[in-house]
Image (cartoon, rainbow, N blue to C red):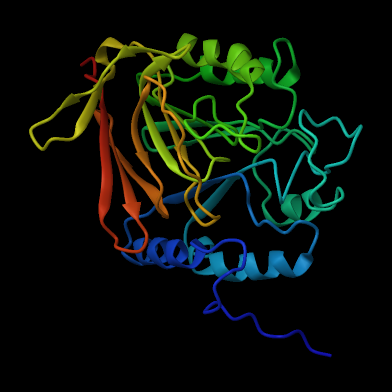
Length: 309
């Protein structure tokens, strides 16, 4: 029997917003203004069913066939250290796929990682150095990944590549904490000091299915607040660096998550389907949350830095 054709007009049963996001981002790619796409975890929600990979790959092909489609390993539903069963070595145990899903992930998305089962890497594009980690592998102090993070971020020549963006799946900050999205204080305690030490400009995370942006935050304290520019856009001045800006951008398809009581570090919270669009020069990074259904910008922020001449 032949394989039934995939129908992208059918709303996905567990990712109700995925089609609107796919259509919006595909239009962005068609405009010719997109250099790359970053998808930081929760890649396909295949949960052990190969047909879900087929459906997902079919959906992203109009984008991934035109620009680089970079991924970060994420925990639940699709991948977990290439296996998700007890005793596998994963930091977190989620038996969603019975240990299967990492095999197609590694095959379909070969990232520039150090080796098999070491799904962390860095890449430079224009004026930005991206440090992409695995929140599912050991990130504790003195672990292999921890040492790699320290070396990678410490080796960036900020005179040539002024911006450092750190990405991983599980966030350090979220106002949507519940049993599914519980934050891991151990992760923040181990890794957040590295972000401050190496002057990370922006930390991007997924996992929680909404959008949230912080102040310049460290250990839950706002060390600096943005100011409004002439267009009313929140602007973080990193010429006098204080701490990273952090953002959760997990609003690309799965059922959206409500917010609970926000922390004092939380500046913007949006529970709509969409994506984060960014453009960088050596002097600034401009970022916008775009609503996938309306194509309207619902949040804008900017990070600036004066360059030494």
